[in-house]
Image 1 (cartoon, rainbow, N blue to C red):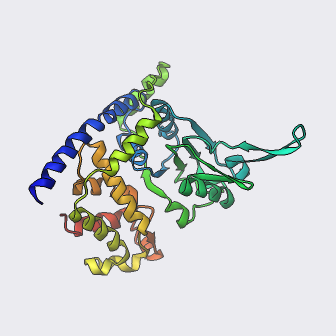
Image 2: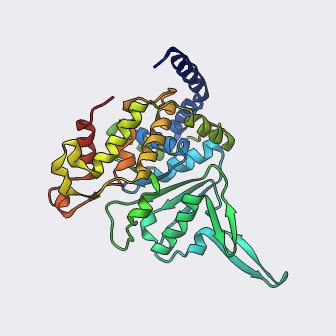
Image 3: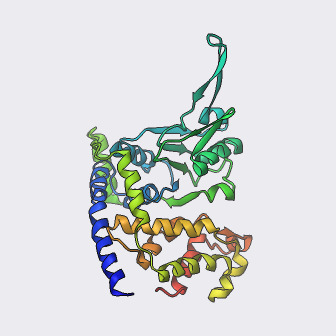
Length: 333
């Protein structure tokens, strides 16, 4: 690397350190309401700054809804929670045309999707046609009602939850739809001391409130800055090697996984891994991506993008096991 680019990175690093100062404020405000769950809060920020949707998986009662609601309140954006049920219709989600006898014409009644943050609660409880109605909004950032297409407001973020333990009466998300989520975040139980604090706050009816400290325009501006985070060619190659190892394990001395992977990560995974790594570096207030940033977001980006065969299930091999082995095998730049 020449001296000129070293100076540029130094300047960029200083600028991003200043631009990312609001991250500490968000963490402080979130910390008032959410006890523990650091990984959940970090993942919400990565998704928000990398402009990617998030699939949250965890048993009920782990503050998934509360975390999203709190973040929406901090940024002062419109937030809608949609409870996905088997009788939900696409019109309940995106809206519909209603005939007005007074004006003798059809008028548009917009649905709850017209918001900044959408919480699709228990997304796998609704049938495929409702899930697919969400697809256009997630991918194209627009909704079509009748003949008209309406742009959705920025920032637009879909956060979907699913319960891993109760599969009765659910409609599993197809691979193509799961792939639209940048991150799949698994949420675990709080630690003993954290749960003691949660219990005390609830029994004392003391519910701290987060302050509105940002505007939606601040997030849109921050996303532009995230794009400027420097990524070296060696880091790009590292990301490509990780993704390609899920497709061709034999080329990376991981032959034993070949019969266990039915399909590897898509090109969308490569893009998401790059964007999420940049967002993670930004959150850590750095102007450049290091291998640890890639490793930090790797599980959330790839766990839902690796298809497992029956052989893997028979041997109790999970996608996380495969990712761990890939990260341990591929040379770190």
